[in-house]
Image (cartoon, rainbow over all chains, first blue to last red; front, side, top):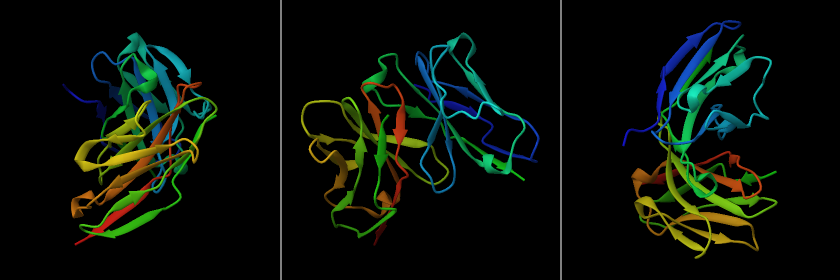
Amino acid sequence: EAGVAQSPRYKIIEKRQSVAFWCNPISGHATLYWYQQILGQGPKLLIQFQNNGVVDDSQLPKDRFSAERLKGVDSTLKIQPAKLEDSAVYLCASSPETGMNTEAFFGQGTRLTVV
Amino acid sequence: AQSVAQPEDQVNVAEGNPLTVKCTYSVSGNPYLFWYVQYPNRGLQFLLKYITGDNLVKGSYGFEAEFNKSQTSFHLKKPSALVSDSALYFCAVRDSNDYKLSFGAGTTVTVRA
């Protein structure tokens, strides 16, 4: 089966610009996650969707970050305006409906550099 | 709220020697525990998980992990390490009272020939 698809793989922008990342989860997976992984740190959950509803967005900087999952399938994560400290790898993951005891499957990530 | 700690930033072992990567967790409910591996410029790959039952779980590439409830630990082990096991390893936990999947800071494993 196809894995989690993310695009673009790399993005370089100037601070105060905006950027958007796209994720297409594994077919049939109800849960979708966006993580931020800063160099040398573990992934930090930004937002978690169950179908098209938000389960958790407590660590999403809502003044500049937004995410949506229209129709409960693919998702976009947007940063506007970007700051230098947003430089990181943004990982998308998905897991099946059964949720709690199932592992998440990760995409290859988008490496964002803010200059 | 759940949390997970990986007390060692780096682990260095010789090829053929046993490998252990430590993980401790904190949850309010029951823990669901996972190990992932990350190679350079790649996403995270699932290795194994503990949900319930036998405390020793076996996973991909010869890895296993032992769940210890009293010590709130879930250490990753491999009896004989390979150079190709050199990578970044992450422990993750999900609390039965919360849907969030939280990760540790990671441990870099280097296996020398």
